[in-house]
Length: 245
Ligand code: PXP
Image (cartoon, rainbow, N blue to C red):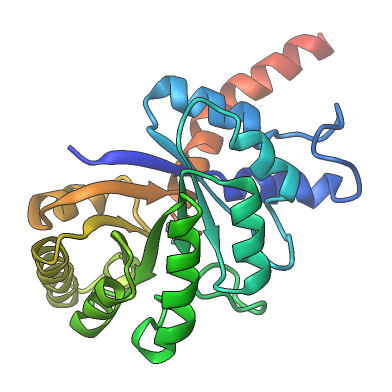
C-alpha cells in the first residue's frame, strides 16, 4: 500500500491571498499550513510536502522551518539552484524533491530534464545527499530520464502523473498508465524508490494502483485541499450561522 504524502502548498496559497504582508505566525494568518499538516498526519498522511518556490508565492521560509519540526518526514520540493541547495542544507529536511521551476507556470508543469542538464542535477543531488538529505527527482515516465536519475546518484524518483491525470480519452489513459507502469518497473529494477504525483485525485488513483507496481509514496495536494473545502463548507457555514443567531 503506497504512503500518502500531503502537498500543503495550496493551504498556503489561500493564506497568501489575504495575509501576504504578515508573518506566518501572525494570529490572523489563516489557514495555517502547520495546523493542517498536524490534522493530516493524525488522519493518516505519512509525510508533508511543501514547495518553497523562488518567488515565495505560497509556502514561506518560516512554513518550511515549522513543518520540519513536526514528528514526520518533510519532503521539500525545490528548484535546482545553488540558493535552494544552500537553503535545504541549512534546514535539512528528511527528503528533497528536485523539480523544474518556471515563474510563469501556475504549478509544476513537466518533469525535470535530468539528462539535458545532467551535471547540474548530479551536483545538486550529490551535495544534498552528502548533507544527509534524501533526494528524489521529479521526472516524466521516460527511460532516458530514469537512467539519468540513477546515474546522477538519486536514490528515488517521483514519476510525473500529470499526463495520465489529463488524459481523458480511454486509449490515451491506457497509454499513459502503460508508460507509468514501464517506468516504475525500470526504476525499481535499477534499485530506485518509486514515488508518483501531480494531478492525482479520488477517481484516477484506483486505476493507477491497479496498474502501476512498486509505488512507495503518492504526493497529492490539489484534490485533497479541494475535497476538504467541499466536505468542510457545511460545518463552516453552520458555525457562522449559529454565531449570527
Ligand atoms: N509532486 C510534485 C513534484 C509537484 O510539483 C506537485 C504539484 O505541486 C505535486 C506532486 C502535487 O500535485 P497536485 O497538487 O496536482 O496533487
